[in-house]
Length: 316
Ligand code: MN
Ligand code: MN
Image (tube, rainbow, N blue to C red; front, side, top):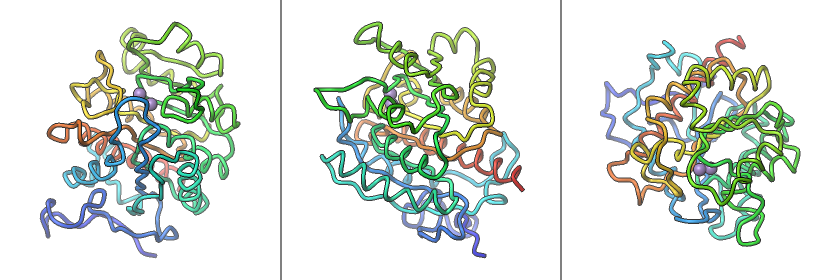
């Protein structure tokens, strides 16, 4: 069996080579992979700024800094995982339903092969076809969503598919188990008080930024773990969960958010859950001075690979 891992950065420098994620091989050999990095460069589901079509490229570029060992978990990712950079799924800019069809079709073989995808967005509208592809194999999933917005609005401009609506659609389509799902980090000005109520009515648990501040990071992790339990879980990370000081290059930034350190602690707290897939979305390189946001996103993807490695290790 072929095992895929990053190029050795003691042999050739990290700034060299074509920009795949972490210098991983660019291949579609799913048979010999445990996890796959996949770009989904669709961004015309966005309601304000656009530019997340360059998110995968931006994240891959700065990901060459990342090394293979996760010191917090004490784990070498590639001792437990064979990982490929699958490339990007197809999209059609400006045509969301056609892009949804292509993204779902692109991710389906990955789930069918038992490979865990780590999807690089793209705006958050791509979560819907991601969940369609995942649920087709795993059945309805628990969701852990880190985001300053719940993305459960009904429609924008009379349209049902935007980056503000995917999780309402996902519940309507039966792709999620709301009673096992939790949305973390909601904050900022709202259209009105019903914005968050809509999520609770769908059955989600909401832990707002104010509540995280009250119960602390460990208390938040405990609530997430209690909610998800042993369910198959999809973890979706919108970079606007972080404060704009740590993630300025995004579509709808909200002040008063989390540091990159707090982001790491929260994601690390998910170790031991049973993941079906991951994404990190809403990186807009054109608004991203010094690659700050892309660097955070690359590190979140690295933490996701650690969670996948821990799951793989314990399933042996
Ligand atoms: Mn979002
Ligand atoms: Mn958001």
